[in-house]
Image (cartoon, rainbow, N blue to C red; front, top):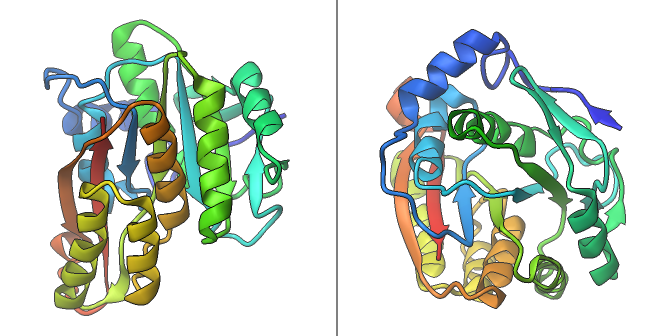
Length: 269
């Protein structure tokens, strides 16, 4: 099926020329590229989190496929959703789903389900795609995606999905992206503290520690599940280190220091 853009014109420009101009302004095409196994990138409106996401994407070497793990904000569909065919659409064009790889992941997992309903209105995957499309245009090559939407914070489930992804990738050229914002709608001071606790666990490369810290400290990191699965998958693929690339908050844009959202970009390599 063709999954049309759901948030273009809301989270990011719906005019292709305007969108390319924005991406050109925030992405550093000359930044040194890294051999990244996985990354954490935010998914808010570009005015708030675009620069933080771009700092991470500027370090990507081009890959044949990106496995994008997102939380389920809408409550629709399966709690373990994967799409194994069709396309995702943005103003920059269609992105094909990697049928071969997605079917392998689905086969490897006992809980993932073929379910487009969970993804049709979910923004957290869609907002990542223009960054990847723009970079691929500049590199003169194409890529495919595997879109996965998760609505669970059960470690055993997240571990199973991470292992299923790693086993399916094996030696293929693929990068895993966890789409997540950090703490939501508390003061700048509280969010900085809570974000630091979660970031510390990611930099220590502790997937279980991240989930436990988020739950014990009531950190409203919406994509903690995707982050845990991505870290586990990347570890099975040889990653052992993590690096914080950027952190910001919505207060830097709207100057509201009482109800803010935090954003981070982190690479795992």
